Length: 94
Image: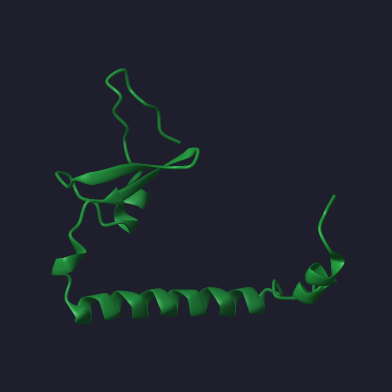
C-alpha cells in the first residue's frame, strides 16, 4: 500500500514498476477507471516491432499455460457442483 504525500506524490511499489518496466525518469499516464485509478507507462506502442510484440504475446501465453497447469495439479479445476449452463438456466436473481 502506498501513501499520498502532502505534495500529492505517490511511490510505485518496486514489484509493480518491474512488472510494467517503469524506470526512474519514465513518464506514466494516470486515468480514471470507474472508482479506481489506472496507471500505465506512457509509451508509444507504434515504435514496437512486430517481432517484439509477438515475443511479448508468446511470453504471456506461456505464463498463462503454466498457471493453468499448476492450478490443475493442485486440484483447483475440480468440479464446483455447478456448471455454466446451470447459471443460465437458473434465471435472474431477485
